[in-house]
Amino acid sequence: MKLLVTGATGYIGSHAVLELLEAGHEVVGVDNLSNSSRESLRRVEALTGKAVPFVQADIRDRGAMAAVLNAGGPADGARAFDAVMHFAGLKAVGESTEQPVAYYENNVAGTLSLLDAMESAGVRRMIFSSSATVYGDPQSVPIAETTPVGSPSNPYGFSKLMIEQILRDLAAADPRWSVALLRYFNPVGAHSSGRIGEDPQGVPNNLVPYISQVAVGRREALSIFGDDYPTPDGTGVRDYIHVVDLARGHVRALEFLVNAGVGQTDPSGQSPRAAGDQAPANCPVWNLGTGRGYSVREAVAAFEKASGRTIPVRVAPRRPGDIAACYADPTLAREQLGWEAEHGLEAMMRDAWRWQRQNPQGYEG
Ligand code: NAD
Ligand code: UFG
Image (cartoon, rainbow, N blue to C red):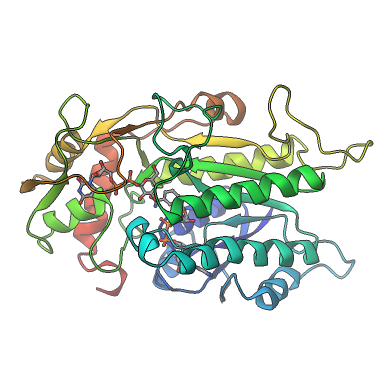
């Protein structure tokens, strides 16, 4: 299949492009390079021996997106692309509370512009990067997809919730569309080659990139944001998932949409509704997580073991908006997609460390 991947040079996008190429698909990448480097896709090309045409464009530029989506279509008027994998967006939770308009504009307005361009090109299949943040502070864990979405504690989370709603409404209104909403838990790690990985700009917001930068000597110590949560050791518990497993989940979701014929117009012209709930069947939702939660202290210990380095830590106050524990019930993805995470915490930390050690300053180093 031929895929347009937005956010293709980013952390998860670049790993997904690699897995798509390995699975035999063709990819065109789009990114505005606001939070990533062109170098990531060059490395994907080197690793796979396959070309990835790249267009530097902003998803909010509807004309540019329509041009990309319509380009290179066969002369008989068939579609140029089979699907769009949509990773592009802003993702820093703290920044979103300071610049909410930028977040709604990039994420929500950007997605609307992309959808409009897709419609104009007759490309009506999308895999969307959502987030466990849509569950808010869950009443209980593990979290299944049937858990009602909650109230996210920041504009970033709300932007994901809004996009999910837009996509659900679109799928309900037009049975030709098929959309997969993938709710990621905590993606970490890197490709086992150590050639591509997470390269945050400035001070990392997330735990594993921060630990990695401490290990490589770029930062002094990790602040543990709170050790008085109602968890076994008092620190926050999360479902860390290896980015390669996550990327493979996208390939499975794509195959599901295509093979299950999701989104093909049924004779009634109606969007099929899933039995017993409000989600249209042409807009499935899957959690992508391991089902296992680890605390901050457990993550630090695993990283120390994988790297052989000591990570100095200090306990700091809780970070506003954080919750005690969040981990997935990944049963639905296993049953419907035949997908489950294969890498454990040790492999996640080993690969995160290999990437950081080989690229101490990231792609620009
Ligand atoms: P990333 O910042 O590395 O990748 C996002 C990419 O989108 C970047 O390359 C950036 O330059 C690009 N981009 C941003 N705005 C754009 C625009 N208007 N037009 C074109 N390109 C634009 O982040 P990531 O970790 O790879 O995340 C990918 C997706 O997954 C995002 O939508 C993010 O919200 C979502 N997600 C990430 C996590 C996580 O912890 N990393 C968790 C849940 C969901
Ligand atoms: N943490 C620290 N110190 C740090 C960074 C994080 O103690 O320097 C702790 C946090 O308090 C939390 C855990 O490590 O308990 C994980 O924090 P992250 O920032 O790595 O991840 P979050 O769970 O807060 O959020 C991430 C993404 C969101 C996404 C969410 C989905 O940043 O975009 O996962 O679950 F929505």
